[in-house]
Length: 345
Image (cartoon, rainbow, N blue to C red; front, side):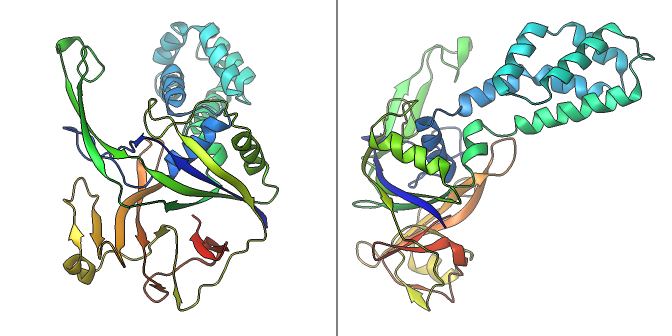
């Protein structure tokens, strides 16, 4: 058993960017799981995507040295001489990297010794430490520490939420830089999105316990937001939910939250539903509105690799009963919470 907390998450606007096209930015209708974990991480004071990007830039030279060391000692030695050791040391301290002292020692030896003195075993050890550092930098802190959590999401109110296209120019921004005077940026925004969020942690539930405390007293370490800094997140109805257990679903269930499908979209669903234009491999299907609706979206459930590309699966939200023969739930993913069936993933 573990512990589960519930809270409502909302904002005046929301923006969960789809990596589909470059001309303008579309938003997911549902907050991706990595985005929800990012919100939880900000409440708990964990480093996010910006810090992750900066740390990777900071250690690119070290990774290059590790890659060329065996095949080109002279090049690795030149690269080492150009390193700022103080900056490297400070960066390693911020990471709390376990092999930092040995890495600094080997860097010093590489800088001072010739190839014959810097033995093959030292080269191999240096490369293993650099590989370990690369794994440390693979994902942002919040994702490494929170990816074990299971979450549930249930939209509140009229869903899918209304959207607007927001346009603005960004003079001398990173979109265009000095080469362009003005860049017109178009973004699709959700209007007043609101969701029930469930967070479940198995075992001792230390993370969920601290999260509940900070939410209850409204004391996030970093200000959470829904996709952009100006869309400050609001929280209410914060509570711990006791006495929950995973269920084996019956033949049919009314699932009140979104759930992850194990099957692709059928031809029948395509023929009956209204499909939004397919862009970059993602699609949204909505049918049967306003009653008995089915909403299906290609949805990010995690990060695929260190390039921070999304793992995409089909998410469905429906007012209908769900037949087990069509949707194969994993036993531990379905929970009965306050007389509702909630899917945690």
